[in-house]
Amino acid sequence: MNTATLRRKAIFVQSIFFATAAVLILTSIALVLFIGSQGLRLFTTYSPADFFFGTSWNQSTHTYGVIPLLYGSLMTTFLTLLVSVPLAILVAIFMVEVAPAPMRRVMRSTVELFAALPSVIFGLLALTIIVPWVRETFNAPLGKGILPATIVLIFMVQPTIVTITEDAVRTSASSLREACHAVGATRWQMLSGVIIPASRQGILTAVILGLGRAVGETMAVQMVIGNITVRIPKTLTEGATTMPATIVTQLPEAADPQTRSALIMVGFLLLIIAFALILSVRTVTGRSSKKPKAVKAEAPEPVSPDPRDPLRELEREMEAS
Amino acid sequence: MNPNNSNGTPAANGKYILQADKLNVHYGNFHAVRDVSINFERNKITALIGPSGCGKSTVLRSLNRMNDLVDTARIDGHVRFYGKNLYDPDVDAAEVRRRIGMVFQKPNPFPKSIYDNIAWGVRVNGVRSNMDDIVEQALRGAALWDEVKDKLKQSGLSLSGGQQQRLCIARAIAIRPDIILMDEPASALDPIATLRIEELMTELVKDYTIVIVTHNMQQAARVSDYTAFFSVTPDRTGYLEEFGQTNQIFTSPQSQITEDYITGRFG
Image 1 (cartoon, rainbow over the protein chains, first blue to last red):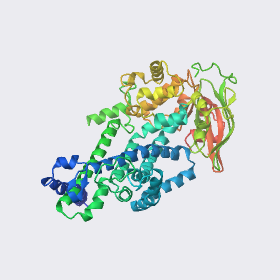
Image 2 (spheres, rainbow over the protein chains, first blue to last red):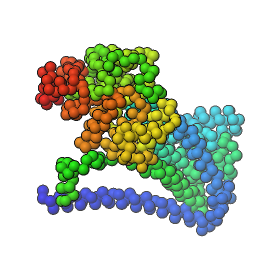
Image 3 (cartoon, rainbow over the protein chains, first blue to last red):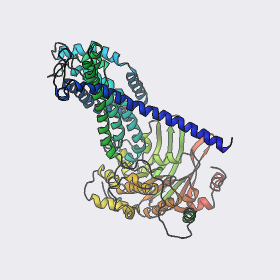
Image 4 (spheres, rainbow over the protein chains, first blue to last red):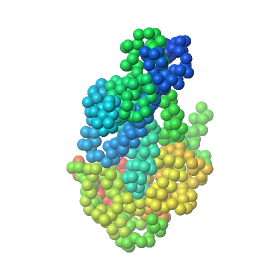
C-alpha cells in the first residue's frame, strides 16, 4: 500500500471520528435549546417572577411557583450528600485499609449489585420499609416526605460514591503507603495526613456523580416523597416534592399547553442546576488540580559544565540540527 | 525522638550496627529468603546484589519491618539492631522504621509542598519546634537545598525525578535515622541524576550506615564497602552466595557463581 492510499485512509478514519464527536456535541446543544425554547414559552403567558419566587404550584388554579419543587430538590440532595460523603469515605477506607481480602471482595460485589438495582426497586423497598418506619417513629400521618426520600437516596448514591472513592483511595494508598510507613507514621496519621488529601480529586469526582444522581433521581423519590406541590413543607416528614418528581407526576395529566410549558420549564431549570452544581464543584477541584500531576520528564541536572560530557555533546548536536 | 543517634540505645555489638541472623522469609508457600546471615558495619555502605528474584529486596525490607505491610509475609530468624531483635513482640514497627529509614526505587514524594514533604515526616514523630532549621538541614544533607530554597512552597511533584529522589532522601534523613535502606534508588533515573545520588551516598555514609540494593554492578563496585551476592537456582531461592569486601568480591570472588554473575555471564 503506498503512502497516498495510507493518507487517504487516515483522513477517512479521522473524519469519522470527527463526525461522531460533532453529532454528539450538536445533539447535546440541540437538546438544551429545544427544552429551553419549549420551557421559556411559559413566560409569554406567565410572569417569570411568579414562577421563580412563587411558593405554591397548583395545576388547577394555574399557579406555577417553583419554590416548593426547588426546595425539595435541593434539600434532599444536600441532606443525602451530607450523610453519604463521609459515610462513603469511611467505607472506602475500611475496604482499602482494614478489611481482609475476602471481605473486601464481598463488599465490592455487594456495592456493585446495589448500583445495578433499578430505582423502582429502591422505591418499592422504601415504600414498604422506610415509609411505615417514618410514620410510626415520627408520628407522621403519611410517612412520606423529604426524610424518607433522603434515606432512599442515601442508599442509591452510596454505590457510586463508594466505588469511585475506594478507587481513588486505593490508588493513592498503593503508591504512598510505604513512604508513610518509612517515616514512622501510624496508620491514622497516614490516612489523615497523606492518603485522604491525595485522594481529594477522586473523592470530589465521586461527589459530583453522586450529586447528579441525587438531584436527578425521579422514580424512587416520587414514590416516597408524597408529591405535595402546593406548599413548602415545614418538616422533613410531611409531604413534599422535587423537580423531577413533579414532572413525572403531573406531565401525564397536563391538559393545557401552559401547564406543559411550565413543567418543561422546570426540566430546563433542573438541567441548569445540574450543570451549575457540577461546574461549581469542578471550579473548587480545579484549583487544587493545577499542581503538576505526574512525574515530570527528567531534566538533565547540572553536575559539571564539563564540555566533554557525552550527554551535553548529544544535546548540542540535537540543538544544532 | 532523640536527635543524638548513639544516646539512649543499647550498646552496639562491636562494630556491627545491624545483624541479620538466619533470616528466613516466606510469602505464603514461597520461600523467598533462606538462612541469610549478614552483619552490617556502622558508617559503611553495604550493597546487596544478585539476579532478579534472588530475594535481595526482600532481605532489605526485612531489615526495617517493611515486610509487615505484606499480608502473606512470614519472617523467621533475627534481625538485631544494636543487639536488640527487631522482631521481638515488644518492638514497635513504627519506631523501627524511624530509626531505620528507607528510600524506594521509584521516587515517592508526598503530594505536598517540598517543605511539607520533610516537615510532615518530622511532625508525625512528635517534633514541632525549629521546623525551618530541620527542613533546611535535611535538604542540605541531601544536596538539594540550593536548587529548591526559593520554591519550598511548590509541590514536591514539580521536581525532576532525580530531585524527587533526593527529596525522598532528605525526608528520610530529617527524622535522623541510624541506618538508611535504599532499594534501587537510582534505577528510575538518568545517568547524571544517578551520579548525583551516588555522590550523595558517599557523603551520607559519614553520618549514616547505608544498605543499598542495586541491579547495577558498576554502582555496587563504585560506592559500596561491602557486597553481598544473593543467588537463585531453580530449586533454591534467596540464599546468600557470598559476602565480603566489595574489592574482594569484584576482583577475586570465592565462588564460581559470583564470578559468573559479576562478569556478566548471567543475570
